[in-house]
Length: 410
Image (cartoon, rainbow, N blue to C red):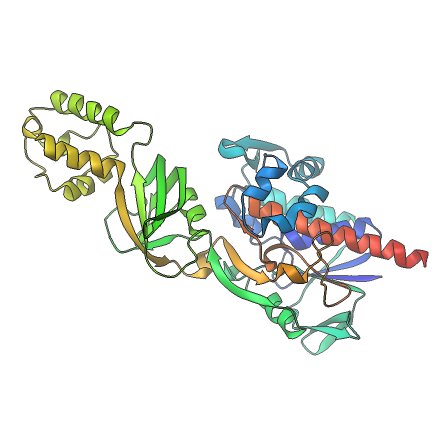
């Protein structure tokens, strides 16, 4: 039986391989010159391919429609993925936050291992652009490429979302699915840098061990400890990207950065008193080197309103209190997101209510399956989104294998 997998990302590659292992004749269709192009640049080229956590934590870290993935995560878990990659010769390591990377720190090693696995299984890898699906009597019949159609008994759509379009994720699959009657929830950026009203000359400055809290009005929508960085027009970094997944309502948000979360206000105030005594004869601008990154000092001082060249020993209690407030509550006004093309993942996609969660098969069209970022599921940073891709791809590929066995037995 002929299986066409449209899209050569992690979801499509896993679906193709699992179907081929079941004995299917599989053709993986990728419009780039080789599969895994986006995979090769994930995690800044290091590929955070999963998270070494429990099943419950996988669900908890899936921000949108996590419950839909129970069966997929059970069927091909993060531990299954780790065992699989090790079996393909990719040694792994677990870093802070249970993030799993190849020991080589090379995303290309993951993509190359998957490609070699597919070739060993006899999967045909073809460079083409799919245009539309062929459906007849409620069943998939094939795919049209340009003016030529290819018949297929099963089709897996795994073309990704619309983030990083230079890697081929341009929403083609959404168009094809919508044309045959599926509901596509409008794609929105998720895990994307934030744009702020306040602008400082801090681009590239990374802050570690800070707490970011985001408010909509007086309601806290997200709070997390970790690492972030300033950009030319706002903020980014792991905790900022995760925060963006909770900021889907229109309007402004307030981001509060606790620069010293390990110290409560009283303890931090005592620390300031000691530092001010130590640098009493120096200008205020030279008194914070033990406390803050050099590049951040001028900005913090400007926000306190304290003259930078005032002698530290002359700082009043009220002025020290103003500094303390800035250190514990460095606020920024979030006015929007960077373009969806810069998002790590796309939120939105095929409505999960139209997909069987155990198999990833369409409830509308027999023989049509979905996998990866095409589905309306997305998660925090930390390897969770790639795990979704691999788990849903495995579910689709294995389900096709089971269908084949049933058909052969009839």
